[in-house]
Image (cartoon, rainbow, N blue to C red):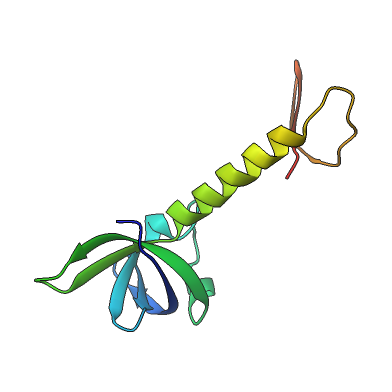
Length: 108
């Protein structure tokens, strides 16, 4: 299933967050963002898009992921950035790490 739904995070529950998508759904803590989130409370009362990753009609369980959508967006941005790269091009970026053999720059 590739169903995308909009919902509002309404509260914390064991292991993640409760989301209102017209019905109650569960967002595991590991699926909130690309990187682990320490303070889940910052997401409460905010609206996001989610991908339905599990749906059990019998039990009424719906499990969502925001992380899957963020990873997809990041991958698309990466492809676009790589398309624009040309030898000799001057770009703006943020230095993420320096090593003995060079630097890692975030280009977007």
